[in-house]
Structure formats: C-alpha cells, structure tokens
Amino acid sequence: MNANKTKQIVVIVGGGIAGISTSYFLATQGVECIVIEKDSLGSHASGFAYGGLNPIAGAGIEGPTGLIAQEGMKLHRQLAMSLQLITGIDTEYRLKPTLSLAFNIHEERILKRNLNWQTHQEGFEVDWIDNFETRKMESRISNHIIGAVYTQGTAEVEPYKFLMALSHASEKLGTQIRHGKVTGLLTSNNEVSGILLENGSIKCDKVVFAMGPWSSHITQWLRLPLNIQPLKGQIIRLRIPGNHFRYSISWSKNYATTKPDGLIWAGTTEEDSGFDEMPTSKGRDDIMTSLLKMIPSLEEAELIQQTACIRPFSPDELLIMGELFGIGGAFITTGAGRKGILLGPAMGKITSDLIVKGSSDIPIDIFSPNRFI
Image (cartoon, rainbow, N blue to C red; front, side, top):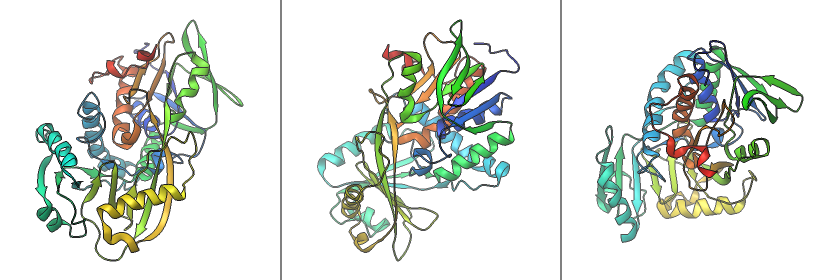
C-alpha cells in the first residue's frame, strides 16, 4: 500500500462530490493530489442535485449504507463551518425538518414500519402525526393525506456551493485541479505508475476513479466487470407568492422545499435514459403531477428553471468503494445514487483513509468493487 511513502502523488479522476471530497481529506493529511475533470466542476449531478441531508431514510439506509450516511451527516455538520472559514463560501447548510406524507394505508404502514428503527437514531426526533396535526403545521398540504412522519434533525445544503467550497479548500491545501480527459491507466509490475490523457500522461503512485455514472468506462482499461448504470433525474424550481415552506415535504420518491434562493425546488424523476442529461417536458409534467398531489395550491406557481442530471447506480444498489483487484494503488469510489451529496464526504474520507492508513474505521467489505468478479 506504500502507506509510509512521504511524497506520494494521487491522481483523482472525476471532480464531483466523491472525487473532490477525496482530494480534500487527502490534502488535509499532506498528500499531493491532482484532480482531473473532463468538464467544468459542478456541471453534472454534484452541481445540480437537490442537496437534502437525511441519513435515516432512503434506499439502503436501514442496511449497510446506514453507517456511511451517518458519517456523511457528521462531516456535513463539521464542514459547514470549517469550509466557510477557509474559503468564505456559505454552503447554505441549514437544519430543515421533514414531513413525509402518506395518502393511503399502504404508505402509512411503510412509514410506520421504518419508525421502529428511526426513533432510535441519535440526533433525530421522529414521530407519526395525523392529518390534522400535519396540516396544522403546513396548511397548504393536501387534505387527502392520512398523516405524515415528522422528522427533526434533517438538513439541506446547496450542492454547487458545497462543491466549490470543497474544491477551493483543497486547492488552498495544495491540490491541483486540471481539466482533461483520461484515456487509460499506466502500470508497472501490476502497480499504478500513472494515467494517460488525450494530450499526455501524469505519473502517480495511486489513482482514484470517482467518475460517477461514467465509472463503467474504466472496464476498457482494467478488464474488470463494473456495471455502473446512469439514472436520470430532473428538478424544477418554482416561484410562488406567500410564505416559504418551513419543512421539506416528501411523498414516495418526490420532494418539495423552499431553498435560500426563495424558490421551491421540486423533484424528481428516475429515468433510464443513458447519458442524456437534457431536461424534458415529460419530466417537468411528471414532477408537477406529484407536486400538485402533495401541495395543490402550487398550480399557479411560476416555473423559473428546470435541470437534469444523471446519478450512478450499481446493479445491487450498493456503493462501490475500495482497491481494485489485481492492480496495486487503483481505487474506486462511486454508486451513491440519489444520496450522493449526503454520502460524498464520507466516501471521500473513507477513500483517503484507505490510501493513507491502508484501512477504514468504517467497515466497507460489502462495498468492495471486487464483488462483481
């Protein structure tokens, strides 16, 4: 692992949340990092995500991803202050309680079943409230709901500003961020020796592939099975008259919240559209249909912006993290799906620990990239 090497150089392929978080935590430990991003920072999912921080709800959270989610939340709390002190950028981290709605008995049962373990999570208060109590808290919610789960302790962050703060802090600590397209991996005696670019090469001791949904491209270089699929998601931003929403309101896989820019951010879709990142009228209409089911009064809202991005999903919907089989010094960190902003800092911290210490305090064997061999 060369854990004791003093002047190792680590190249990180990908400038999204996972890659920049890795560079930041490596840089805090004195490791020289070079981040290679083929596009501008924040031009994909890490810059266009919703930025909700809820480590006790969502796919995989009750299972093995739970520890990663809790670590991600802890790091967000710490970074919210430290990054602003270092860079002057307000990442807009804010505590924001959540109302998760149920419209029928089936949805109520699912929400209440999750309460059995959610109520035992430190730092959160979770309660079931009926229709009357829910609408007392927010009268604009549909009167057709049965009730909701009210969660205190959840938060939000502005993803683009968070990514910019992390990247600026990394650069202040010595990280280089370069634009370019990686085309291959250089090895010597089954150890990483560098990377190939379209217009040259860079020598390095370690490489971290943090390429999000494009991670499957590395199979061309490594001849390892790694089936990462892109899942498209769209978000609309709306302007409405009246008071801002004090809560993040969700139903099934849909959400709506007022951000510090004063706009309602609402989403999202889950579309198998390959690498297409263009917003569509169907995506807009699908989001509005769900939004109006939750909050009928938003029918007259003014559409200000619509965005789309793609997120990385693994075949078993678990993270992919660790050293790649057969090539010393080659690591990967990806597969966060819809939880990228929450999980990203923890993924970066864990990957940096693997490189510097040779191990992680959080068990990650289940996320090994070699499980697909």
